[in-house]
Image (cartoon, rainbow over all chains, first blue to last red):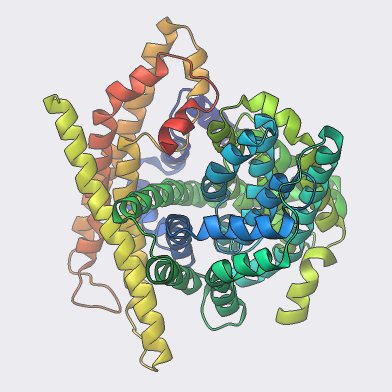
Length: 427
Length: 172
């Protein structure tokens, strides 16, 4: 009962514009005082300090920083040029380029918002100039950007791995195949649009041009080899891989391409710090809530309640998928992971779902949630670049969202899709 | 520029500079630690210091985010309410946020008193009081950031933005 009151209290606080992190802290504090009186209040500061001290989470600011530096160093423009040479000869070429470039950028960035800001700010105006409907341009770049959290590295996977105590490296590996399937599926949807609306072909295919674009972008292609090769090969942890990503991006942008504007770099670092702090404050206040919910045995009660209804693994997965899908409409991805994962993990373990498999399912749900308004950070960023209405863009986005849902269902019910590589290399 | 605007800008500049320092320190520490390990001389204090830097970035960055009103929230419902409800609920939300951080600053100070004499495990020259100081200082700076950004937040709540307007502002 007290948990239900806390949930209602939290919703009420968020509705009157109290930031989610602080709403969580307030209800956790109220719950703690109700259970133990004011004696335990000293724990607030200690728990919030320790909640923010997690070594794996160091990867978040570093990957955010790496993404910003890569964008500032001209790497995104070179990836786009290469994709143009490779895919520009297909009907609806610029839409293909958007998705192809997002797939490459996803290998060096772990944030979908960073991805759409980096690529969308170049590609969406380009698509509009070529006569593509602005809503289509926004929808294509928005859905393509969501690949950034499915294809490793991925900030939501780092969050999930830390909270669920699961190997981040195995989570990264589990995202490779679903990310590729999602990318090619999105290209299929874009091609269907291109045929239906007779979108243009950008340029004739030329092997010479492709080679020139590849040579220009070769250093950019080396980045995922260094970052993911280091992490998957076991030479560095995910956190250290993120540090190397920053170093490699500084080297390629500063020494090879020589395109840095120090003032812009400073601004990007400040933005990265703010983004990190927003997520980390959520984690810190959730640590207080987590302590209270664990003492009240809420995760165990939720698990037992659902097990009483069904213990079928696939039925439980269906229920969890629906839960995350609905939450995706109303919660930011970091908040969804931080709030829900600790509560459902006992259930996941109880019915024998592999936590790595569940991690990729959660990530795919969040990728879909980033496309479903009213709370849809990536779609809103894309719409703001394209200057389009969110709901009109959402109509164009439906086939893309359908592709992402199909990938989610495939990964949920054919676990091998995501887990084959994990089983092959790590088990 | 008014005194209030100058003060706001100064606080933002100082917080931003400190956050850039923390981000840079974290990056340098991680890269140097990998290099040392590869050379066969692992830094024993690396993990502990790196996580302290992350905790510091959390609270100093959160204060900067409060000043920029960048924390995740849902202003849409409040914006849709009639003005006679909007103002008292806005005041209530601000009181709750500031109240939470007043409590955090106070408990942070009490915790620091309790931890007197403790040091980091891997780096005994650094006191835990110093590392934990981020809670009372960060909470106080959060309150300052929240108060300094109230006029801007109230102005933004007085009109209904077109789709993505806030995001355009942020991206620009």
